[in-house]
Image (cartoon, rainbow, N blue to C red; front, side):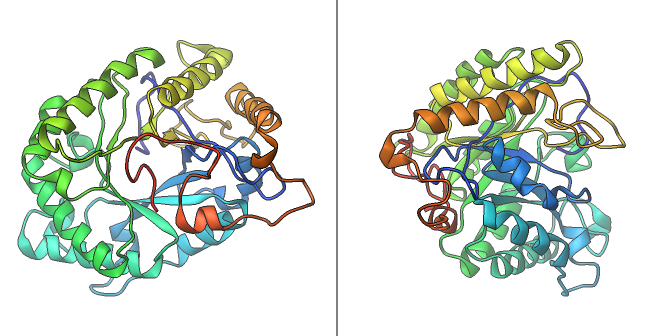
Amino acid sequence: MSSKVVVRPALAFLAILLTAVPVRARNDFGVTIEFYREAYKQGETMAAAGVRWVRMDLAWSAVESEAGRYDFRTWDRFVDSFEPYGIRVLFILDYGNRLYEDGMPPSTESGRAAFAAFAGAAARHFRGRAAWEIWNEPNLPKFWAGTPDPAAYVALARAAAAEIRREDRRAWILGPSLGGSTFDFSYLNATFNLGLLDIVDAVSVHPYGAAYPEAAAAFYDEVRRRIALHAPDRDIPVVVSEWGYAVEGLGPEGQAEYLLRALNTNRSSGIPLTIWYNWQEPITPWHSFGLLDVRGRPKPAYDALARQQRTEIDRRPAECRDKRNGGDRIRSASAQFGFDSCMSVRGRRAQPD
């Protein structure tokens, strides 16, 4: 997630709910942020472009620096600052902790128990205010810190999900956060064979293997086909929890075009949530995937989203709009994470109830 190499294929997004704008609008688009930046101060700017979700690391090692003691204050300010704009947080429970198994991905019963306890503590602290993704791109050695191990990942996801649901029975849990520059069906199949579909509410993928946005549609169809083979009696949605295109090779205007095409592809394919990588370009290691540049200035991709957002608001049926200064500022949608009544979505539990 956070240290992508430039020149990766596409991603898509999410849409809206902002404090002074129509209450009933798309809520299927979000952005990835790095928590150490001041993105928590940018909720209004996000909402103006239709951002409705923020995906960010909830790093185990940063939360639990002393065994059994959890400190969520850093993340409280993000959740607190985004909520007034109807922006929800998708936390990635990820990476090792030097207190357990030398900081490697947990592969023992005791290590999994410690990670699960961290996940449960997070679910208790943010009950009803956040959704959860278990790890980031565990199919890549870069993020699994070694040879990817589907069995170890599914065992970890099972333990973590159980503790999350113990603390919040309505929690929305995603996995396996499948990444890479190719479509890793081997890893995906392995997790399905090991029972991942009994653990998660939605299958999360990062379609960086799509050389251009429309190429992702066939990938989604194949993922759904494989879900149907393993869980024929259930309608499990596919979520794009990360996707993006860099400026390199496209140019700023080309990146903006690809972003809109990616979002259109996902909406046409019935993808209920798309998270764009990413919100703002980091200082180091620098990359050009952001909607804002390294100094926080909007790029053409941001401007294109904001224009689309304004157009969609104007086209909403009257019953799906709210006056700028009239009507309640909605929190009910974000409180339950659900889509509003003016947007239909394919799939059960496409977003949290």
